Amino acid sequence: MLVVGCGAALVFLMVLWAWAIIDCIATPASLIRRLPKLLWLVVIVPLGGIGGLLWLFFGRPVTNTWRPGGDMSAPPPSKRKQRARSLRLVRTRPSQFEEIRYRPITEVTDRKSQELDQRIAQWEREQQDSDTAGPDDI
Image 1 (cartoon, rainbow, N blue to C red):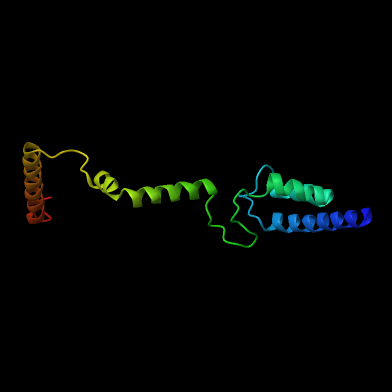
Image 2: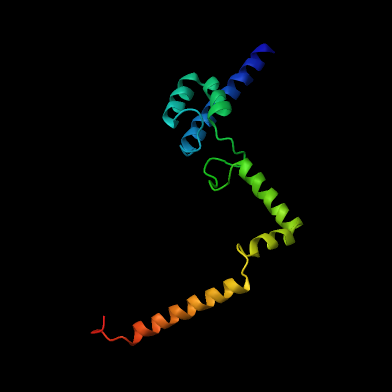
């Protein structure tokens, strides 16, 4: 019975070792934790199943949605949770966000509005004058 248990453990470690090598090679270097990719391969290959376990716990990307050869665009879990939380806020309280989004930054008073109208009129006159001026006038 001991031999069967040891055989099963050995097969498991061999499969884990092969999987860790393939997973390390297929993982983009920017997602790997702790060590560079080449150094992880140097750790995994000679240490066998132990290297595979080290890769699994310390080197493999944290994102649980990533798979070798899969879509790399999945954000880390913290970003996904943050986005879901913001979507929930938008859905539950849309009026609050509309108020903030469309509220003018500075209040426009009658006096300020009159000043702005005068500046626009002056700018329009300057534009008209520059359009009527010929090339010799410049």
